[in-house]
Image (cartoon, rainbow, N blue to C red; front, side, top):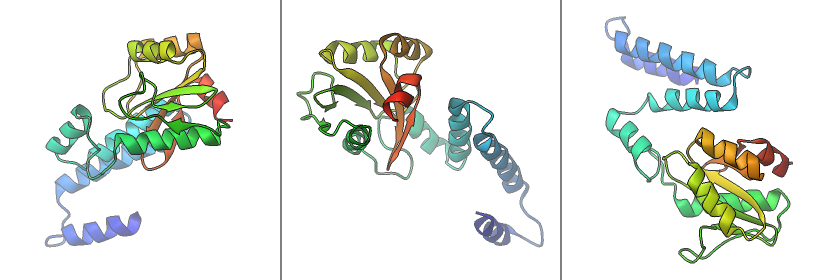
Length: 189
């Protein structure tokens, strides 16, 4: 990373001076990155700090598309199908060997299913609320439930998941799954 920064500084130097706009951006980025790497803070705060640092590289139009669209993050070609496959792979690694994606459209709010678990995947940038979790719980048919989301969960959604024992995860393509609550930590063991 320092080699890239040095190269960029060299490229930006004009008459021996670095533009003030770049120095200000770099200082903000370094502060946000330090906040992300600080393990004394909660994982949600660290993720928010990293996301803010990352998004600071994009134009306002790209940031708007990231926050307000259901499409891929800037520069990425991710899809909901890949997110569902990542969730199925994670569940197989958690011990649910028969976990598989359901057929699109006929899943009754269940995207990944096995004999013991039912999971839903929301690959959107909108926060996940309690009603969506309640729909999954109703569609699970008595199976263990897990929810995978690209975005954050609302506080009422986290409270509900804790009440019913639903595992909550965040996911980021190509292969990052992060437990959000205690049920998810236990499932991932």
